[in-house]
Every structure is written in C-alpha cells, then in structure tokens.
Length: 102
Image 1: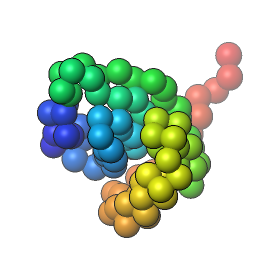
Image 2: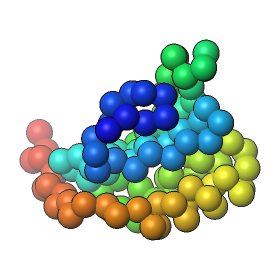
Image 3: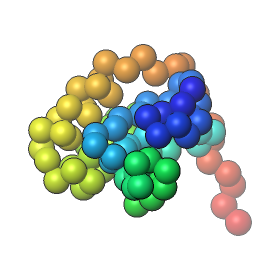
C-alpha cells in the first residue's frame, strides 16, 4: 500500500495527510510507532520531523493528535485526524514484552 506521496506503507498502517503534512501509526513488536513530518517539492522529498513509540493504542492516539497539531497548527486538523483514527480498523496486535534490562 502506498501513502499519498507514493511511499510504501504496511497495509495495516494508519496514514493521515493534510496538504503535505503527515502522521502515520504503525504496529511494531513492542507497541505502536507514530511518525510525523511533511512532504516538500510536490511530495518527492519526505522530511520526518519526529517519531515516538507507545505501548498502547491510546498513547499512540494522544501522540497522533499532538503531532497533527504540531505540523498543522490547527485544532480542526487535529480533531479530524483523531476522528479518522477512531474509525480506522486496526488489526489485532499483540504487544511483545520488553527486553530484560542490561
């Protein structure tokens, strides 16, 4: 599956785009990975402004809203991202246990 800029994403990843800005949520072994940033030069350049890992989907949702607000500076866009996230059909995902401390 490709996102709006043509980059390949996993079929079970949530991708939100707004005028060249994006936030993605991907299932990973230890939880959920949230990536946010923007596209430049008509989508040919992808600039990742940040990423964070969360153990729960609720934590990932909170970060999604914060990231959408950060990249757009619009409460309306952040609310739109949250609504789309709430209706997205996430796959069953079992979070693995944390590795032993060193």
